[in-house]
Every structure is written in structure tokens, then in C-alpha cells.
Length: 164
Image 1 (cartoon, rainbow, N blue to C red):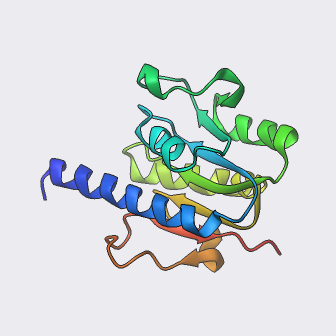
Image 2 (image 1 turned 180 degrees about the vertical axis):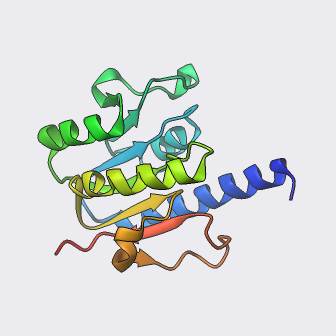
């Protein structure tokens, strides 16, 4: 598969899963989290499909398209391991949807980061919330739900929060 085909498949999968998740969380009150703003395409789509929700972005540093940068009050900048605990102090567990797009291009580094931040993300989530991740998180295997049939295996991982 060409790299172009791969990125098209990845972006199409993201769009399908995000729109599916919006239907699941529609009746839950709470905020939305975007971890890994990148150039802002997913954030921009989330604004479109969730126009009445507050969307908080977590990113090391903003390098997005100018039209896809949230207001400063919706930005948490720096290392996730620092910004997520700070966000928890401010927001508590009030989020109903999180999109984790944290892959670095180095599989082992990305998987390690995902495992490290998993409990920090979970601290921000409400029970029954949906978390969509580009990385599999082994510690969340009990919350893993089957992807939609149209999503290639191991492309996107979907979790439904089950607070113990």
C-alpha cells in the first residue's frame, strides 16, 4: 500500500469513528479532549460535528493551520505527562470524548507514551465516555470495544470508559 493510500485510510477511519462516537456521547454532558493537535484537521472536524461542546486541545507546541487553533483558554501546552494532571486539577473528570492522536512515527516510543498517559487521560473522563486512540493501550483492554466493520484492524482503538 502506498503512503498516500495509507494516510487516506487513516483519515477516513478517523472521520468514521469520530462521527460514530458523537452519536454515542450525544446525551452525555461534558467536554471533549483532543490530544495531539497536529495541523488541526481533526480538531476542526470536531468543532463542526460538536458545535456546542467545549473542546480542549493538548499539544507540545502549536503548529496548526491558523484557522484550526483554539483560543488560549482551550489549550494545554507542553508534555502530556505535565499538562494532563494540571487539566485534571482545573476540569476534574468531566470529559465524554477524547481523541488521542499521539503517534510519533516510532512505534515503541508511541506505545510507551500511550501507556504512560493512559491513567492521566482516564482521570479526565466520565463513566461511559468514549476514547479513540491511534495507539493500543494494553492497560485498557477491559474497556476495548470492537471497531466498526469499515475500520481496518489495528488502525484505531476504541475504548468505552468503565469506572470501577
